[in-house]
Each structure stands twice: as C-alpha cells, then as structure tokens.
Image 1: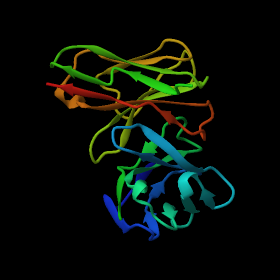
Image 2: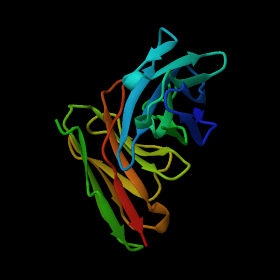
Image 3: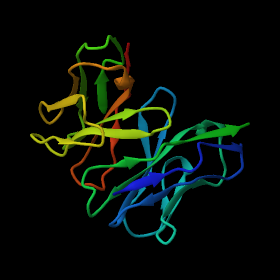
Image 4: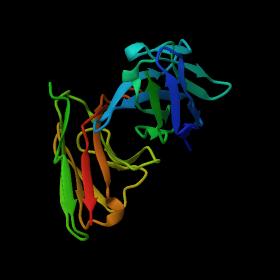
Length: 115
Length: 113
C-alpha cells in the first residue's frame, strides 16, 4: 500500500532564510511524487513533480525538491523564503505500478514565513 | 478558461437531507476526482473517474455516490447526510495518464447539523 508522511505540522522560517518542508513516502513500485500548495479558502495548486530522470526537480515560484530513493524522501526547498510563501503544503504520491489513478496526500505542513 | 468549477461554494444541511455537489472542467481532461479535506488528515479520495463512462471507489466512498455525466462534468451525491460528512470537498481533473498533474476546483464547504 502507498503512503506519505509529512512529519512537521508547521514550519517557521524568517523571510530571506532557506526553507525545507519534509516528505517521506512508501510505495511498492516506482513513485510519482507531487507537491501542491493551498492558500486560504482556495483549492490546491501544483508546484512540481518527480516522475523520472533528474533527482532535483525545479518548480513554480522558485521552489525545488530532491528525490532521494534510498531515503524514500522528497523534501521541498527554497533558497530564500518570502512572506507570500506562507501557506499549507501537501506532498502526494502515486505508485506507478499498483496505484493507478489513486493519489495519496500527506496531512499537510503549514509554512509560516515571518517578515 | 475557467479551469475546474464547483457549485455550491457553501452549503448547510440537516442530518438525513440529500444534496448533489456539481463539478465541471473545461480543459478537455479525461480523468476527474472527488476529495474531502479534513483538518490534520490531508485530502482523501472519495471517488474518481479515469475516463468518461467509468467510476471507481477511492479511500472513503461510503455514504457517497457519483455520476460522470459527460466528459466535462462529475457530480457527487450525498443521499442521507451525516455530521461526519461535514468537510470541505474538492473536485479535480487531470489528463488520462497517471503521472499527470491534477487541477483543483475552489472547493465546497459543507456543514451537516
């Protein structure tokens, strides 16, 4: 069965500092991994995804994520945080072999960037 | 392009009442999904439709039914609402392949008293 964990409910960072939002996953086949962001009272918006190839994936708004197969992780990073990055972030996984169209989402991590 | 639209935005029901949540997409996507979002639990898949004419259960299908009316529209029905179905409901769509990104609607907030 596929699963995803976001170990931190909230991450606090000062504006201009680097940020990391953690995600680990479990699948039986190869993973398709996604990061989405949710602003208040809005639907989820796509940030980036890993399907295959280069382990470092670059996405929207200066975000990037590194796929680490040995550690089964897909942490979201940004070199310099902005106050406008404050939002709820979701990691999601699909099992390429058995998951079909079912995407499993993590519980979410709230990012708070202080000015 | 409006993307994914949902109606209504907010609804209050009494226990036992029924209602249908509507979803439409204008991106010519084959696949559509219904999720519910509860605090601390992320999004959980209720039902999905991989393509027009097919529907399948997700993680939490009990108490819900769906209809893929055509390629654009995918509705979610609560036949007899329960307080446990108080949640925010999101519809999403994607191209057919499983590695494709999902595009989400703005959500429907449902309160069941």
